[in-house]
Image (cartoon, rainbow, N blue to C red):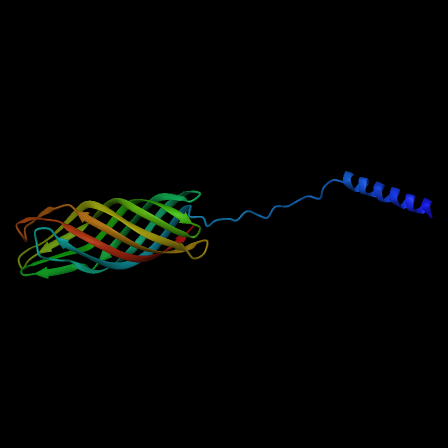
Length: 201
């Protein structure tokens, strides 16, 4: 009996030693979490509401605006930066006494920089604005294509890997120009609140 016990103990010890010499089973770490990618080109459309005022005049143009936009983003972890351009048709107009001012179309070319919390992007934007400011009275109509500045903030949400939706506020300030309808220099300052969708390629 003692011989059997000693033999079993020796076999067990030998088995444990042999098991210790075996190569360890490979360990596969779980795949890293892949964050939403904002990098690359995109195209989209937007619609919103524009309201503002004409300098040295009592008119306050306001109305619906909408159009197309496109841009390109670069991304480094949570930092997203890029360029965006848009072109808009606008129904913003107002009449006061003999004068009427409107903003039939405008566009912007802006830089964007923001913080990406996975599929939610918070960003600021600033750049150039350009557009048509139209001034008229009963005798004359004058269109002036003018330059200005644009700046604002927004939030964009990735709905799918290729589709996103955004809400944005822009402030635009167009330079003063001489208008025969008023006999003085007038410029447009406007706010724009809009929503849009973008397709990412």
